[in-house]
Each structure stands twice: as C-alpha cells, then as structure tokens.
Length: 270
Image 1 (cartoon, rainbow, N blue to C red):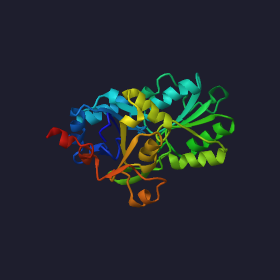
Image 2: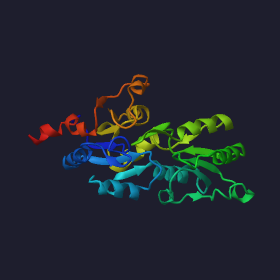
Image 3: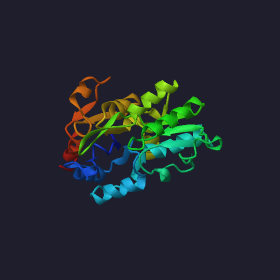
Image 4: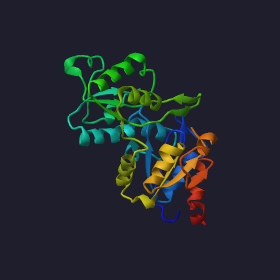
C-alpha cells in the first residue's frame, strides 16, 4: 500500500446512502486529503450533475469540489464525441444530467417518432419512473431501425435508505436481447472509465486504489486494469454476491471509515 498515490472512490454506498454520510466517512476522507493523496470520486450516478453531487457532499461536510467528481454522464459525453461525433441521441434516464452531456445533441423524446427525430444512438442512463413500457418500447423501435446503443452502466440495483432498488441494467439486458444488439458501456466497469479517472489524476494504475461497494463493477473491474481493489461491506454489498463473484478483491474492509488504517495513515502520524 506504500505506493498508493491516488484513491478512486465510489460515492453511493461507500460515502453515502441516499446522500446521507455513512458513519466515519467524512472524517476518513479528510484524513486521506490531509495525507496528500489525490482523490477522484468516480460514480455511475446518473440522477445528478457533477456540480450538484459536489454541492450535496460539501454541504454534508465532505472536502469535495466539482472537479473531484467524475460521473458516467461526463465520460459518456466524451465517448460520444469521439465515437459518435455529431450523433443525435435519444436519452432514457431518470434525472436531468444535460449539463454534464456537453456537446451531445439530445432529442426531445416526444419528437423521436418523427422521421426528422429518429436518433443515431439510444443512450441509457439510470432507471426510474421514466423507464415505463412506452419509453422502453420506443427505444426498442429505434434499435430495430439501426440506432446504436450506449449505456452509462450495467448496474442491476443500488441501495437507498428504503433498501435495494432496481436499476437500468435489468432493462438494458432486455433491450439487448430483444433488439439483438450489444450496448457499448461507458461507465464502470468499462476500462475506459478507469482510464479517464487515472488520466484526470495524472497517476498510473499501479499507483491507485479503487474503493467500492459493487464487487464486480467497482473492485474487480479496477483490478483488471491493475488498480488495487478494496471492497466495503456497506451499500449494495451482499455476502452472497461476494461469494459468487468472478474474482477476489485485493482487500475487504467493513466501511470507508477503515480505509485510512488500511493505507497506514495512522502510523504515518506517529
């Protein structure tokens, strides 16, 4: 752990649940900051913009600014600019994230049945009430007509203060199977997302650590690109998911509050 210069941190389920700080998380992040480690908050959250996320966390006491937050929508915008330049996109997402989709042409979903409004790409974000039959069927129709499929993530569920809630990954599988297409995933667990986070911090993979509550999308995905992976037993963590995972985390801790000790920060103060 002595070589760690940067920490990539998932937000939902690691620092907060339903945007309320988990015990000891604020203090732990302050300690990591004070130790001089670079920090990036890397999240598949698609319901809020980077600025909104940073403001909410700062109001809760976390030492965070908008520049510390890297979201799936922001990475998606960069991906679309590179791979689908000028594309017209139909966005299926819960929450207003257009601020983070800079340069992306997002069609009005009410107009996308018209010839002039047929999209080049269907972009799937996070699930919510917007994922009703009409919206999913409309997306299916676009895919049948040749539109590409880009997904911000494949998360099946996330945890709120009311328990686990279904996420867009469950619907994405159905769209892929029905339309016989495969989505291009831009957020975690894609290697491109981690590459963007490392580039943002200016560090190499072996100098970084990723801490998350999703063993597949956060931890093992990071380990596949040579980033040290740390799993926390908070948020969406389930023992059965841990046991059935496709690999083994480098480290497992009870919560984010235990990360400074894992990094040896307490010893450095002595």
